Image (cartoon, rainbow, N blue to C red; front, side):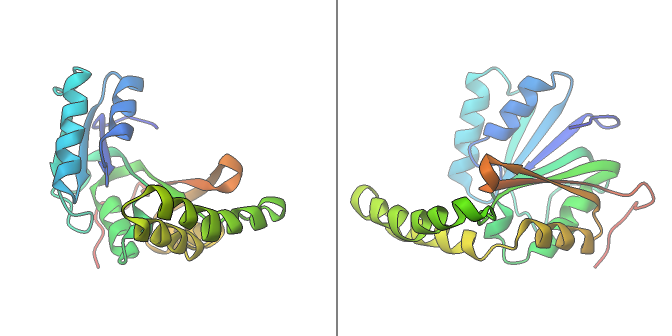
Length: 200
């Protein structure tokens, strides 16, 4: 993460605030805004920040990733962890991230993906489609959520396809950083210096 202008970080689909809190702890001169569609998640995030004495630097709020409540060019770094997979209008969400990021700023996406390594691919397929649902039936009251998780990972674009998709929305210099043998990927791109507004 590079903070060079506004010293502000935006965490979209922030959940209970782990990414926001980690960003604050590692970058002591920044302020953080976290947005999540689910109000109980926002409450839990605010409680976590309060317990770590970070309430003055982190602002969690309920909001929509497709209509972010911020003006253009507000954040040096805009991020979303494990959220884009659950948004049908992915292009619109990425364009919103681009809109609120300063020219030259970073757009970061961390997301699960179906593993591409040939050796692990079969084992991961068996885990997602058989072991995970079986475990969910035994231990969880909401087994359907685990079926959705497996299905959404299986149908998410490959890392190369998603990076290309990010570029199509106007994000430049997109790089892919596989994590945990490719189970997740971090995508890091930039808003071009000449892009002062994004429309459409």
